Length: 162
Image 1 (tube, rainbow, N blue to C red):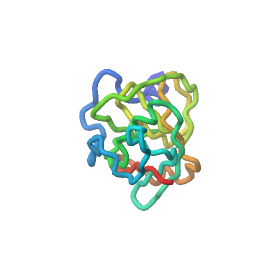
Image 2: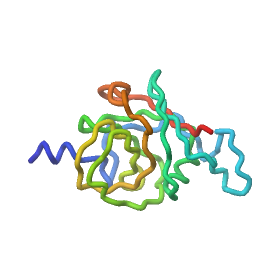
Image 3: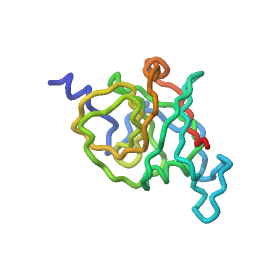
Image 4: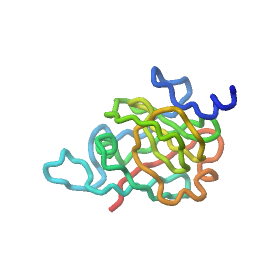
């Protein structure tokens, strides 16, 4: 029972854990991705996301929801993501994002989720869960993701592509 509980746990909603991933190059609210959206609060139009981990790049699609819209305002963003449970990498945002939590029941490899309002999680293994998340997006083809993230902490860059 303990293994099941540990295998499905995620970030703490209450407060960050010591030593967890932190932003390394925050965008400070300025959109430097080169997209001009006229009167749309500098939110990039594209929902195409490039996730770079070392020399590996993965294409992802962001959801069309308020959470993903606010996340896009932070991009491009390079963060140090911490390991948790042998199935996910996580980092904490400095500010909260809006949430629309749901219970996916099954996490799929390549899911990009928000746990609580500040914990961004990239899952590199599929598993069952009873936790609730807000979906940010999903990697289109997550083949090779687990080997790219490896063990321990890893630097990851999120950026919008056209």
